[in-house]
Image (cartoon, rainbow, N blue to C red):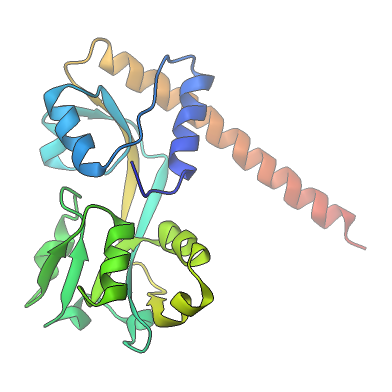
Amino acid sequence: VQGKPRRALDLVEAALSNGKIPSSTTITSWENVLSGLQRKSFDGCGAMWRSKEREEFLLFSEPYLENRLVLIGRAGTGVESMGITGLQGKRLALVPGYAYGNVLRQLKDVTLVYGPSDIANFQKVYVGQADFALAEELLVDETFKHYSPRTQRFMAAGTTPIFRRSLHLAIRKDYPAAEKIISAFNHSMSEVLNRKAQKRHSQVFKVVGDTK
């Protein structure tokens, strides 16, 4: 998906390769992902939130990552410590098609403004077309790094996630051997994550062991 951190895609590609599951990747907008799955132009999506509506036509893997969504806003608005209730009377930028779930039901007297991606919504806040936006914490961190120091001074982000959603591989139910692919992916992803955990443990042990 355009405008997303590569961490999820890198993990998915590693798991598919490790499990010898043939695949090809297309980077496109989230709107195109959803419509493409429904039109059967795409067979699956490597990073998707699970919802009852999507379960009607998609099979989901076990979760392999967690998305933590935080608020972003202009500096000086108190967004760093703001929660859902602080959005009353404000304009909140979201991405259409995202499975925000219970978060939307918690919003009271909030004007929703939609943009095609989290990065586009970051820009909406920056130019004053929205007061706040809800975006993935990792993406927010990466976006801030790529903006100029001047821009960074004008923007701020929440320090506590508003909500969390697990990430899954999703495959169309009518795709041949979809269940078999999901099962193989789950096993392969478990191996990939275990290797990464062992590598981190080894690196920590080495650093601690080398400390004098």
